[in-house]
Image (cartoon, rainbow, N blue to C red; front, side, top):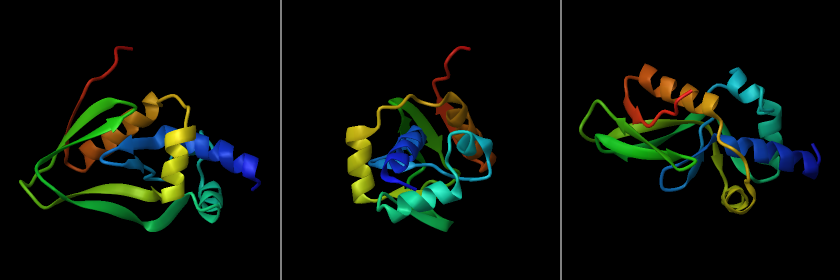
Length: 140
């Protein structure tokens, strides 16, 4: 994949970024059309990894040490998560993390729109994991 193609794929990846202290791409199931319809596939992610913008882990990443509540932001929209336990909780982050270079590029060059379908997909995934999710939903 050429540099121009990497730039386009990385821009597409930016619609999957959430903020929780830092930018986190929530890439859970690469076979799901919410990702593949936007050009995010294992080969395109591997190309971004080779370019030094992301790290891919088939086993997935988790963020540990949450209390009973946390808040994540998707394009400025707050989404509150309530875990089952009072402390020692962890959140599944999916299979991708941004490298330092990827974070810098995302901050300066990701001029993309939010993806409502993806937002709803993530919220539903968290609900399926037994989390209580509160967010402001847009009228359709």
